[in-house]
Image (tube, rainbow, N blue to C red; front, top):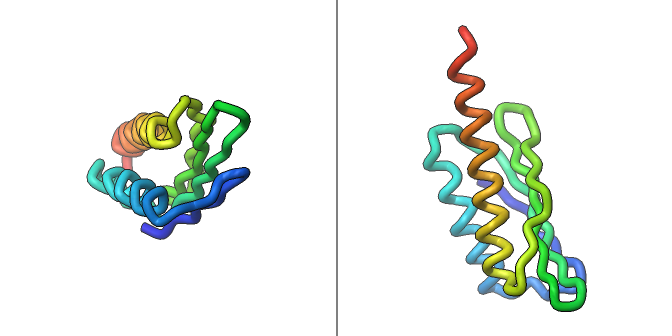
Length: 98
């Protein structure tokens, strides 16, 4: 999966880039192939926020911002939200007759 990682008041290190790539790769194990993702990391004072969008089957699945005191925890929360949306999308698609 291709992904774009942007930072707002955050330096995108190799460790952050690798962590985001590893977490997003796990989303492909849910049975639906995601084509791309956009992730934005932001620091505002002591709050660290991660937000993102997945492109699946020509649709955009957007997760609201996940905020935590640690950037890695915010990324984990974001991936959990995206995973839930991907699961709902997959269930809706399997319920439709093709």
